[in-house]
Length: 287
Ligand SMILES: C[S@@+](CC[C@H](N)C(=O)[O-])C[C@H]1O[C@@H](n2cnc3c(N)ncnc32)[C@H](O)[C@@H]1O
Image (cartoon, rainbow, N blue to C red; front, side, top):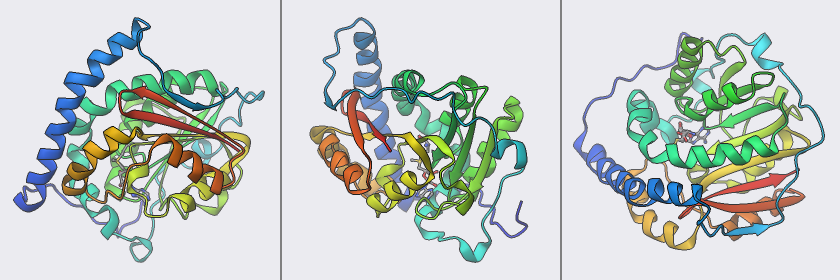
């Protein structure tokens, strides 16, 4: 662990936290009134699933197995002069509270996304979680794929530390953590991952094609990328003003067809998009 990385305790700042609180209350209200009830409706088989492209097939391999988790028991941090702090400064500040305040919204979406991931991912998959935050989905993936491994990267060092500590506490040894920027992943990742998972982080990336090209670079042939984020035009339109005001570093949300175009420009061979719950989708790109 780098001796130089900065520790930030959260302190209330009305100028930043009031807009964020408004955004969060909008997310919670949407989750309580739409996402949870519609999950139950979907469970009963009544959810009209919107999709784009052909439903993907699972790569016929067992998966790349464990590698980084065997050799990297400690998180790998950037040197302070390598970090572009501005873009994730608010995530550093709010890292300790992030999971508590955001999980009520992401939990039902995660649950639906994980079902799709479980169907399309080989049992010993090596998975990269981009923008892993405090590790909510990363730990779930580590539990789902005990023969595989999950590597989490995040630019906010506080997030990396929190995710690593949670994995340690939970005893998940099939995990590893890096502080990294999504368009400059470690060189040793090239061609090493069966799956890249990216949950509610894609809307933060100013260069989405650059990120997808980087994802493509780190995937094995026929590897898959799962990008979970906003996804229908109406939900994006409704959420954008709140996100702009209260989500630090938000850039924009994309529809399924906009994502199809971005994936194709990054070189992906196949693309599939599905509305997981009203307004929220998953894009699956196959290399
Ligand atoms: C909204 S959080 C999502 C966290 C987690 N995936 C989840 O769904 O709960 C977005 C995360 O992406 C990270 N992030 C934002 N921009 C990034 C970048 N350019 N490179 C790496 N991580 C970034 C932030 O630090 C933050 O932890």
